[in-house]
Amino acid sequence: MARIAIFASGNGSNFESLVNSFSNDVENKVIILICDNANAFVLQRAKRLEIPFELIKYIKNEKEKTEQRISEILTENKIDVAFLAGYMRILSLFLLSKLKIPVINIHPSILPKFKGVNAIEQAFNSQEKEIGITIHYVIEEVDSGEIILQKSIPLQREKGIEFVEQEVHNLEHKWYPIVAKQICDGINFKNGVKR
Image (cartoon, rainbow, N blue to C red; front, side):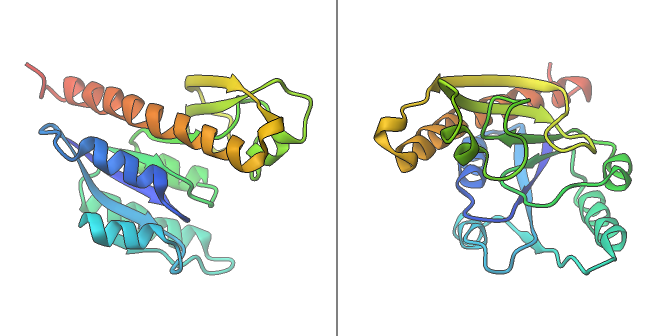
């Protein structure tokens, strides 16, 4: 069984879509939420969905100490894979090398365009005709890891940015669970769970 950690900092709609997609999965299970924001709505979702969570406090100039704690939590919980779902912290090479598990992120743009924060707004204010999502492996450089999947849709500016944001979220909620399941099944296969 692939044991899953999800990292989130905000509203948590991608967290919830992932949890729901694994709710009846006998081979993969969401074990824990890692959150760095005590006011994040994702914590309410975790409570409602009965997913244990750890609230991580980043202390100025002590990122390595904080990431050491994250590494310990994931090791204690025997986590096989981590999915970032709106986690607003950059994971350092120190943490990524300690984890030795796949770490996957979803980004609301067609990378390499519009890296970093406010990607939907950046795309909306550009001359691009399409908008979309990228699911990729996490490396130290932000939004630059190996691409797993990209999906795009027409950018309908005339309908307003709220409409465009919802369309992008719909893409995320459709495709992130599909890719997550494929990755987890691959981990199971590698570990000999699949028959």
